[in-house]
Image (cartoon, rainbow, N blue to C red; front, side, top):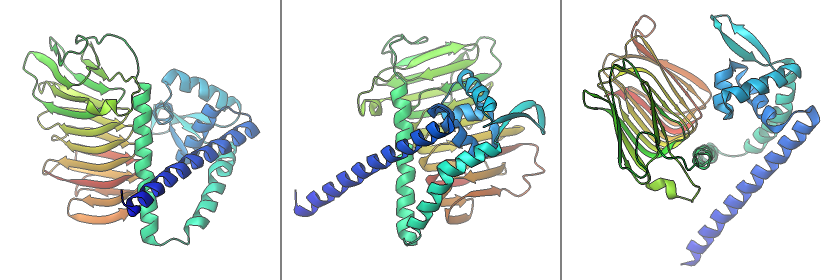
Length: 369
């Protein structure tokens, strides 16, 4: 190893050490604020989400906080009693309940996040645009790393897979009289390919490399849950290919972080697509939409490519920013904050995609393919 190599390795070690100290300092701040306002750390995390979002559904709060629906109900009961949240009917849909911030939420949020943001902005003001871009992109990628690793650690367990023998390289289920399907990954995965192509009599067929995950089938719902005993980098050797029956509509939900996702959904009837938890590379080929089809991508990502068929109407709401963003022929470079792009005639189209992306990414491309 040359002297330059040694110096470079030493700098990497120093950056990692400093990043760890930053996390510890943030943890101390959270502890101090939680003790001062009289809430626990879980409630404080939810309070911070409500402060940033202003209003959201209980389900969205559960997903963003990583809590179960039952746990989030208990948290909201406590927060409502303490004056940190209100549950109100959605004026656009009275069947939905929204969680909204209160004056107390905004006061605590400003103390926890606002003062730090002001001090941070003052610190960053002296840096060049190139330096700020480097810092931003590094933090986005680290966010993806932490989200993915959290999902990997959480996926432990020793249960025998339902639908596949332990270690079996393949799993499938007959379609029977099922008229609609749902594919769900609940604990992320390393390398996933999803496509149309199961045989006529099959609901789905999946093949695996590496240890087989848990696969459960209930009605038309196929749930794949990758078990992970936490051995560093062991999960990277695991891949999964899932072929879905193209004769029924599908809802696809992928949670918990993924290293690489390739979803060629052309040939399927897609009801909705939900990708949360962070990912390294995401590439999706959408089919022609039927009605309003929601697509949600949440959590940091390195590269995201979303391809739609020619003539398909689509609106793309970008939250969290991107280092490089391209929408059809528009190559817009770096974007921050909230931005919305739509294809011509989107508002009048009966069949269309409504895409929401949050969490930030290094490169986002939306085009026709």
